[in-house]
Length: 231
Ligand SMILES: [Ca+2]
Image 1: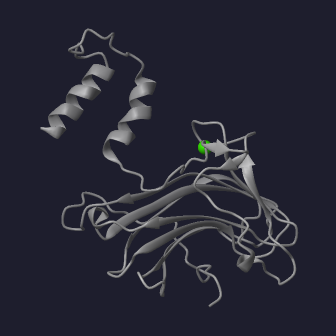
Image 2: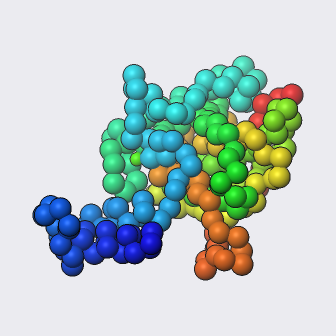
């Protein structure tokens, strides 16, 4: 039934079917490209493309995590919205600008049974003059008691690239059984004085291996430890 509705919806969007309420069909193929992924994927993240802002800050993402400052006393890199460029459609992305320090933005989610245990993390990153520092997108989990369970997915840029255009990274991973709090970080992994950009993240449930038609894992380089607060 659902598949039939989706097929009809797409065919109306393409102008193949007439909509039942007399609404004019939309003929732009670009709209199909824009809307089709929304029909098949459910991003668990809020504001994954950094298009929602309040008081100039990205909605649903927190910054100012002083525990992340390294080296000690160096403060945090500036984490802000960049409205001068973005990856793909949209008008903004997340930017971390270092000043001999590193920075982080974080979003916390409470795990829900309907997600299942198999998830896909993906996102785009871009670099400018970051030296050997890497941009990262990480997932870490805690149980109900707040016990740290570890890092479970890390998307990391190549440390040999100091400047690089937008590149997409993706990894499929399993949530631990006791996962309750799931935190997603965008961060710079070490002190640098360059700029890192992040855009169009996604954290999506995927079917178990037996049902998945494709569950490729690419560009995953968990070279360094997932960042987490000192205990
Ligand atoms: Ca964006």
